Image (tube, rainbow, N blue to C red):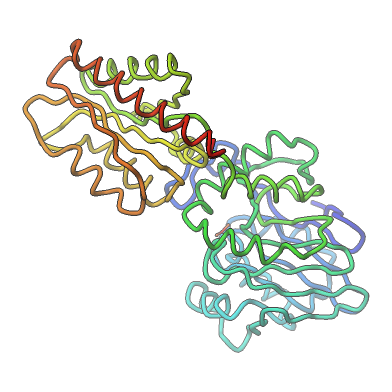
Length: 396
Ligand code: FEO
């Protein structure tokens, strides 16, 4: 396995994971992923950036077969998918100094038991000369852990960003420009799953990087951005751009009543010019819900009442929505019950991280009837009206 040149003196030496199906024992990876590492060969010093997931460190080591000396190993983020291979790399290059942010130093000791005296913490704004190339370190905390660190290769205008701007995408394309639509979709989903809950920090770090001249952004997952403005602009849109005229509708139906309501409600919304993204939670990739929530103003949860509360499948999805902290503005619940319960209260009490207006829920006893369909129409009216108001304020 060979190294792949990004530009003169910078090579990609990472590993593509063509098989992994789940991240964090939670997030489906329909497009698999990659763990990028980069080798920077300055005229005087050589640097390895990150060390891949431990299961694939043999790929990295094969690519480094002919590299006799590494002066610095730069760990941009201590999560194991980028740092797990460090012990193997450090064994081959015992003279190499490990560099990380101060929090990274702490985390590498905590999670990988790397002795603190093997790690040098680099400060925000510090520079490191490699001879004809210079690395400039920028602390970018909370994209994704408090330790995350960016490194700017000044002469090449290349920014290493670890998880920031990444995409879970296994591909043989080194550069994003080879297939922009595919990378955009994977990066949006990645943003939804990893970055959206940390949106205010993502925004701050985006602003912090604003003054840099960029020819390349090299994240630790997915292809290298050789047209960086594409992903920078996408992030600006996902963080604060207009919302879509859409209702996200995750639902479960046990005996068909809630399904009837959800189906009718989608039609009713469509008649009012509002799109719906329904997700049957018995058969849904949760990453798709996360992605739909990036720019949706309204969430309507469909659930039967089960033993006095929402269906457990809905509870799990609602918990996830609250964790993801999307930019939702409106919330409601629809569904069917047999003999009462606290379904709406339980669900709304779970969504403490959202600042939403709750629109009148529609719960019916047993099969939905004419008055229930009228109530769904009224809910669709209320949503259409609010979306129109948002659009007038350019929020859609
Ligand atoms: Fe790709 Fe937060 O690790």
